[in-house]
Image 1 (cartoon, rainbow, N blue to C red):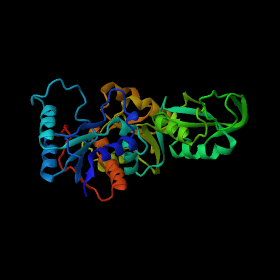
Image 2: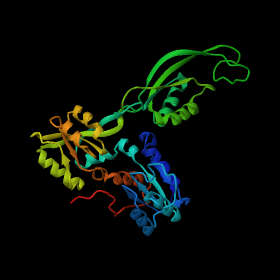
Image 3: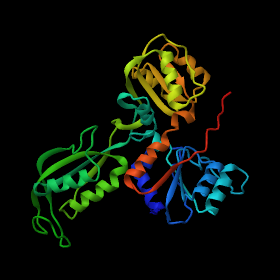
Length: 366
């Protein structure tokens, strides 16, 4: 079954919100080949020239990766670098490229959550919640229409706090207005001041939902000129963020746990800080280069923190406070393709998805 490439990309943009990506990142559609539809997509952690060749041989019109092809600025396309050659050959072969990078790291059920799933952790929660992501909507609605407005705003995604939805605050009062000769007021008469019993309706939303929530509000509100306010909140958003922390069902000795990491993630050269001779129960992790969240892991009460790209002195700084385990950047993110697979196949169950069989890990071990 062929599906529009733009439809797939638009779905991923919303399912893994682009607004979650870091300021330095470049997630989203990297290359659009011009083909409107494709019958299959290839999933990979990285795109290499070998992965592109694989997509060509399989007839895939779309490659979806975790790491972006275009991460640093591309000033020329002459074929001198592997990035330039991939761009040229992707366009020649009518292959589009899409990447979900730091937005997939931060999204609910993202990269770190997949790591927790592989380790069968319980009671999983965000390690470092996002900040400056929540807004409050305040509006005033006639009592006769409050349920209609509430339903519309909630359907647009507002009103979710943790495991609760349809969350709002409502207070009774009255509003005043006077329309000029150009108006057609919902209540009262043009040219005369009117008092209307109204409900003050407040709810929360993620900032990327603002346009959709506002559209729903305006479409459902009976007034020609409804009053509303959006406020940025300083509250942490526990529904998304970097890393996660959870608990093992049964405690494990430190070395046994490190051996389990090696088995689960195929990590051939785990580096770790000095053992503390304590059992492992609470586990924190962050896929990719997450050593900057070691302090968050310590504050969470975790016995071990798993990530990649840890520097020499960071092992020393963690000694005594937590067992710090570097399993490798690629190894910690290798299951990111499974997340993307599950999202797409649930939305487009008849679309053909393939996992790349090429090893794209640039690091080798003796």
